[in-house]
Length: 112
Image (cartoon, rainbow, N blue to C red; front, side, top):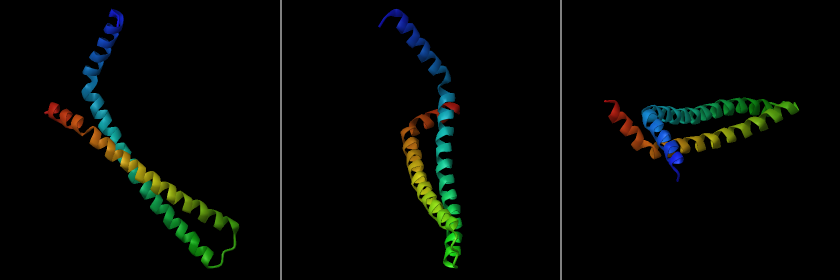
């Protein structure tokens, strides 16, 4: 490594050192956002399920409109996608939270 590359690397590390606390706070906010997205996906899945149930009941009452069948299929698929996406998102949240727990704790102790 040449002197110029070392100087650039030192500049990068100096910048990271100055912004470390802000970066950890931003990271913690991003991790919380991942949790909220997962929670939101489950909420949307529940509401979509309830709407699909209403359409299913309409079909059982004798509706023969092809659009009702399409809606039922689409909403059922949406529920499955939202549940799988919610599980995946919440698993990602847990992994991120565990991975960066030490940094979060260090940032809290530095704040005091």
